[in-house]
Image (cartoon, rainbow, N blue to C red; front, side, top):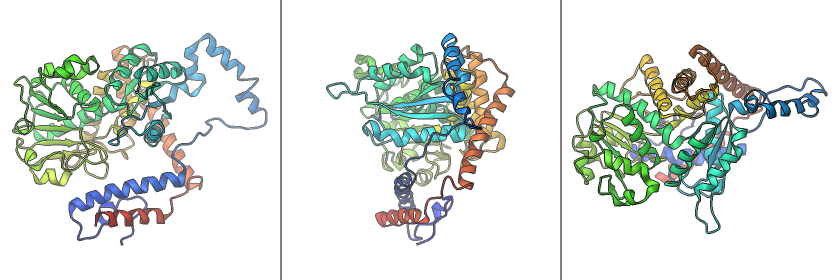
Length: 484
């Protein structure tokens, strides 16, 4: 068995030479899952609390705590906004979830979401210079039914400790009510990353894919597979960015979204989907295969698995077709199969394939931008501004069909995105703190460099140890044996 490197850059070459592309794709998925479990167990999770102030002598305890800290309490009492400057609140995000829809695994029970929520906190710190804490809550009532009001009440009660709230992995339709209520009733930004965040990065990828295909956003025919929180928000944001809703057809598990969908019309919890039923698919097409004929773009966030989208559907699309299959953890069709079927550009939500259209490119910079100007909310216009920021950054350094968006290791993209979001927040009138774009960029750049340098120092100085090589090799061996 070949040796796998610690940086995992040789992941595509460590599987047996006789493995097919499908076996390699499956093997990588299994390897990453097994390595994740073993590495999390080795480290005991991936986030810790560390002080940002020094202890230069015994009496500094009396500065950071009593009696000195009494001055902080009374100052904030008299001016609550001082909490953004005198505590970590101004750079702190609460990552809130009831863990009812974790990735593609469904309801994982409240603590089952901790791995993902800690992951969001990890990425916020490393990529955006933002501190975050995972808050997995039990939203079940006495009958065991998940109650959105419990999440709403929880966030409203704890909002005074945070500069922003990131909602995550809340099942529909509860996620719509939770987000829309909290956006209006909280004094800090509350956003649903599965919705606005995914929409932002998807739009960024679409912008550049259309440039390469030489197609206009206002003319393309788009098919959406899946109509949950992510894809319905993608559709809404894309329409705001210039997509003609009459050229859009959406499907969920029960079929096409049309004006005849009584389930959406009669259930007010699905008002976002009902709005799309009225705006899109004017011809009332109900067959997915028919909808795919001549389509320019497929955006799928639906059932994980490589057979969800058929090769023949891709083959029937228009010339230079664009295929986004972003189900996690396994895309609806593997990129190699979509390419073989004729797709010009293929994107997924995974970093081990080209064109990772993943909200990890969005939320660190967007939330940093919102925090710097102390925004009251994250508007759709801020998400669209972030999308164009990402797309423009990638175009400036060069794009091609295998590289349409920035990657997470391009550090400069995040302060750029944060600055553009901050400026849009000011333009939208939701900012409390008015700063220039240059100030925003330098502020974000400094904080992000601090976070990255701190993480590197902890590794270099031995406070964070490298995982044993045996963990990597055992995970690879297990994956090979499972797929063979």
